View: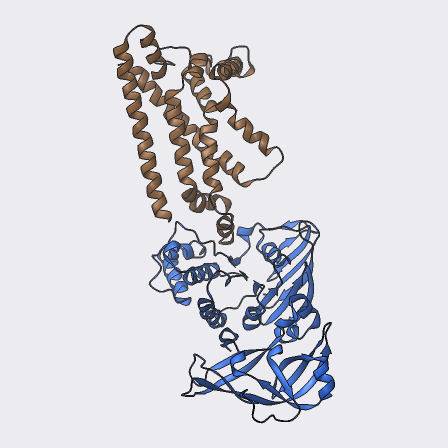
Length: 222
Length: 362
């Protein structure tokens, strides 16, 4: 059992969720409520990581993070280390490829808040910020929760992109999914089986908790 | 403290109107669905911005497109009762009301929310969620929430359309009672002429975005333009009356300024002041006092004027004691009775022609 890889995966998943939470709230709410030109294009762009092969997506991220790219140069100049093949680079890639998993369910959550209820919040004197905290989030949070669980579980399982931008550096970019692949390549079926079972257990647990919470919210609101 | 509104726009829905509502006054914006009345209300609340509009309340400007002034909704002190109430489903009734109280903090806020719930007779139900309340109770929570901000303008968007008839009658009576406590200008949007006439002091009739009539409810109800827009069968007048006594045969005797009026049992104590909506097409006219007639109400009246309509009917304004009612009869009847302004005649009204929801506390 590769505990380092598991711990790395959990850390990566947790940080991805933490960074994506505000992004999902902002972008999901914006897409849910606003009508603007090019909204269809914006929604398609958000969904793009879902349909692109991970290798293709990973390849572009590798180019964008590389030492020759403006981002790569900026990163090296600021933090003194390259972005590719680092935990930070992996986290940035993870945030980007999880955008559809975070934004889409959040958008659906905000869309489920009736428009007259939002208008009522404004008519009750609530600023947009207060309305978000007191009315919209309490009503949209099943969507937000789904988004975060999907993001977490998907980060644990992502393989292709991690391999492309992260490589397989133990303790830095070697996630549990990569570790399992390594074990299989090294004919360590026993190790691969143990780690796979742990991953299944973690995923099952998170999703069960989500469903349980959503059901409770559903009862609370009806 | 008055509310002044001017809207002129062609986009989405053509609108061209201006009106003023005095403090404590309730103005009904009446029109068919699609006439633009709700859009006017949304403009006042800041939920919609027309191309050219001005909304001023209490001397301060909420919206003036020409001057580039626009306050966002949450900075306008409005109280809005939405058509489907739009209560916050995750909050209790008391929390719904408290969420709109921004001038008090802590326990005083809770006490104020309870006081408002009491004002709309919902004491003891504060801990219920909206889903655990009946339609009528939800509407009352919405009214309490709208008042919680101490609004400078109270806006009611078809607030009675989602409840059954019986509940509606009760809510009418409560709104009438509540109005005694309210000092702000109020606007009621409705398509129901009965509702407008029962509740409002003044009416603005909107047809296809244009203001076709404006004035006191009594005046608007005999205004040919208003009746053309709303349907001539809506012509009616409100007759003030006081309950005299309940008869054992299921009738109630009322006193009006022109004499007694018998109605099917009215649910109020003797001495109670009422207003009775008399539909113009239910009133018959007679030159001489008729004998051997089943109709129980025969009152002496004087013709004020006659307004020929577009169709076969004439709308006649009648002085009935100190009050006025309307009668709608055919041209043929006017000709055969030779009815003219100033004539003393008799107005005949069947007791059974007065619907229960056309009688209200006055």
